Image 1 (cartoon, helix red, strand yellow):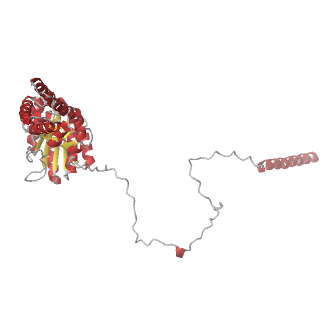
Image 2 (cartoon, helix red, strand yellow):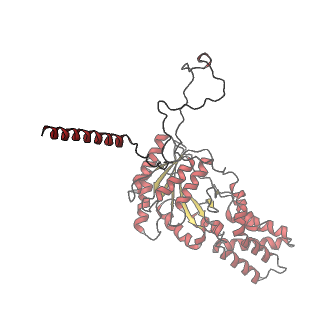
Image 3 (cartoon, one colour):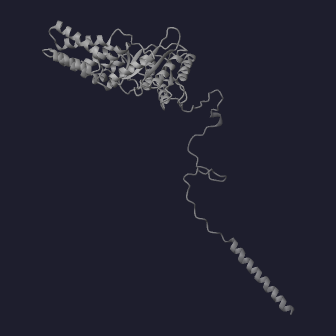
Length: 399
């Protein structure tokens, strides 16, 4: 019995030993390596670890610590400034002789009037029918009835005395008579220098769609080109984005713009613009008013209010009426109504390059008794020019 039990114990011990050897050998067996991961092209390069092989040294001469210049703190530290967000200030084109430079553009639209008159005057016999054709040509160009009659009467008298009529003589004759009508003795200076103290105050008025805000911005460029500092008053608070448009014009030449909330009181904005202009010591304050239909009494009364509020600071030096030259005789009706509400001191004729009716210059001056001071001859930023009678007439009659 004892022998049987001993045999069983020995068998169990032997089996256990064999099982341990098998398990141990399995644990020592290495697992297959994991598949290599795809390289991450977006990951930064791995930092070197301790024990990694260093980069093979390059063949270059190494300096000792004595040869290395260390900073002593005397050299200034240069810190790069972030790029400026302020728009680059433009330098406007000089105004002197600007109309002469734009003469070719004016000639393209107005030359038909001068050529038509010279062709008629060159006829061998100037009978009544021819003089009627000359009158019709002038009236079609919006010269106006009374100025047309004056010009025809003057031409008839001069031609009768002249006798012979060479092309050069006719051109000189027509030039003289047109200059009489346009007027060479009128003061066409935009008043921006008050006799007492700064700033000069200019208010710009007109009907919707005449280019009033654009004209105000271009006038700022004219003044800056002449060395004046300018504050713009965005008193057109009714038209969406009018203040943004004016400020864009001002930013381009470094002019400060005073604006108010959309739909706010335009008189308040005009008042603040003059106030800030005084505090800043600015040369000129330009006030852009909202476009008004000349048939709307309430709007016109409000324009009068803007003028009265501004004059609490100082008298207005200029009230410029902007007229669209392409509207012709309708522009004269507008001019009359505006002149009744505010004292117009000068006319700005826009889009004169887009019409053959240059006679509106003569007609509007005769209607209001005030001179045309500026004319617009295109869409460019520097296409607003001081009006020069001689250059204008020369463009009418051509070379």
